[in-house]
Amino acid sequence: MNESEKTGIISRRNLMLRAGAGMFAASIAPVLLPAEGAKAETISEISPDGALKKLMEGNQRYIQQKRTFPDQARSRIVEVADGQHPFATVLACSDSRVAPEIIFDQGLGNLFDIRVAGNFLDDGVLGNMEYAVVELGVPLLVILGHERCGAVKAALDGKAVPGHIGTLVAAIKPAVDSTKGDKGDAWDNAVRANVKMNVKKLASSSPILAEAVKAGKLKVVGGRYDLDSGKVEIIA
Ligand SMILES: [Zn+2]
Image: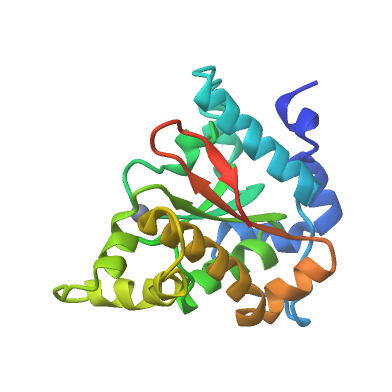
């Protein structure tokens, strides 16, 4: 049994049989939205819960320093050269210490990454997510915050920042404000609130994603990465 069979991801050959050549001809060039509404081909048979399990198992290997560095051989480069079937989308902070492929012990073609300092939703991020779900059939979305996030700290401090950095601060500020007066560590409270607020916001901001969740095709979770231990904790 090969790695794809173990994880329930069907082979590209089967996908072509199921989806027809048209869709996969398009997957080589930039993919167009399906002509009829937002009906997406399910191109991965891994379930939303299976995807989360696979991701968290990778994080366990990383924490225990038992990484297997999957899907990084020359054969994998060839395998994914003309099409991708990632099993999860991770919206992570741009922070250099929170690289999804490393902390979840994944390889090429496994994760559709979106990275923005402060891991918040805006129209561009939502567009990326909708593309991942509608066009690539991704069954899992993770919004991943992290301990001691500098972008969250900037919003917490409330000091003037130069240039476009203010855009980040303004986007994170509502989450920071929601934690005012809460007990405990103000910085970590804000990190957690920012994740939870964006998970909640996702449903109301994207009818396409909300519909996919309702249909059981998509799971959305929020996580917090611990810089000290390397552990990802699911918090929303
Ligand atoms: Zn950060």
